[in-house]
Amino acid sequence: MPPKTDPESNPVLLRGTKKHLLDAFEQLKTIFADGGEVLSDSVDAWSERLEQIAHEYRRVVCELETVHGDDSYKTERLNFDKSYCVMRAIALKLQKGNPTPPPPQAPRTVTNIRYSELSLPRFSGRLEDWCVFRDAFDSAIGCCTEISDYEKFQYLKGLVQGDASRIVNSVPVSQDGYRDAWRALKLRYENKRQLVPHPSFV
Image 1 (cartoon, rainbow, N blue to C red):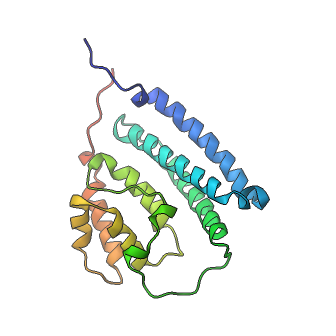
Image 2: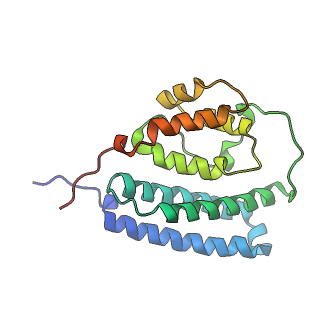
Image 3: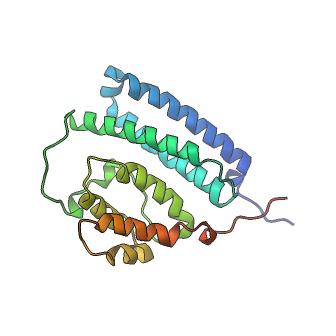
């Protein structure tokens, strides 16, 4: 008797789920682009919906790429992440009620960072979790010009655990610390040959 497979892992169903997520994302882009009362009156709810869609989209695409060997989504993912960054920046400005960038502040410690605003996944060094963490962190933190490299380094330290934490903590705090730590993580986990082998499909 053949082993049972999770129906949610079926590549056809995953592609269908991805399409529905992208459709919902396009509708959300229209709301963020139009702005106005529809967005400003319920920005917290729309922002939460944005995070939900982004998280699920990255999970589905990561599974298609790493489990089913479908690596045709790079351009789509990049466009998705660019739009996500723009929408997230709009939401954060509305939530803070301050459309102008805040004045420079002294470096903050990791304990002052509000992870709840970002809903980012943590990463313990499991290879199958790398691309979800990489895409989520890079689009939410790495591409954000309003966050200093020092703060990005603190975000990164607070979100890694286990083997990944040892890699990040081995990098000294310096002006280039964040870039060095992120580069070290990518060198360790980016090699696609190290990703979990995907099953063969007849």
